[in-house]
Image 1 (tube, rainbow, N blue to C red):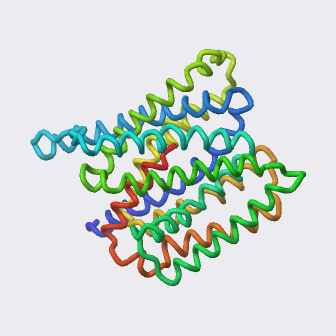
Image 2: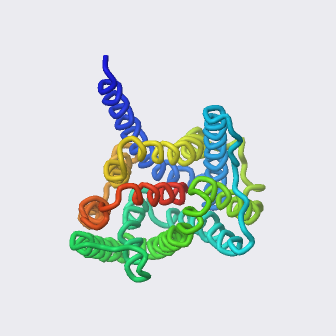
Image 3: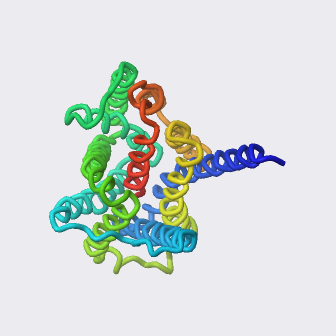
Length: 332
């Protein structure tokens, strides 16, 4: 058996793992919806955040030890941040690891899981729009088309949420704010990631913002009746946090090295579809006609922006570095 056979086998295994995690990430939205029946939004969110953060740190530390053994050198696990970079790091920690997940789970509590996943899929269009306005990203013709498609999908989804029988407008508004904060963080964290490395910077950001998040949520955590929580709530906290959030983000970044950004992004855009399917299959949640139409527009727009746009694919290496940051900052 030659090296090419091994390579193909490794590639197939990465595809299989990504498919598994696509359904796991989709199920995360539905599990969160179930858990919110027993827990307040912030207590559930911070519990899952803590599990995901612990798992991510553990995976990172094991990788760090492995690299130390391979190189026979001492590699710094966490970098020494220069004084002038601390204000930016603190700011992105608060908006990215405190406010964004907090608002995200509050918005989910006012809508439903599959719908929240659709707003998440809007991220590439919002990020590209910010990048274009602040001249941090270039966009080709297909990118413009993708943004237009995403905007159309957003209008349809927002209109659906305003219908009296739906009443999702407040949850939608909160989710949009959480999404905008995540995108702002992504653009602000990029210089620090380039300077110190994406994984160490996101680790520090998660530790700082997560600590503040736990302090804010502590009154809600104290009153939770942990022994009375149901099995699916515990699965949402442990599996959804440690495996889906913590290990899942590491899997994405590892897959980037083997498969490249384009293929990994395509799998990421399948998450809302998986969420809609799992919601229908598990809890009988039927998406509205407008939600389905908006999903087609938003996901197609994301594919045009992230995959098809010619300027977005000119430098594979640069994109890979950007995607490392993007995936880790979307870990919650």
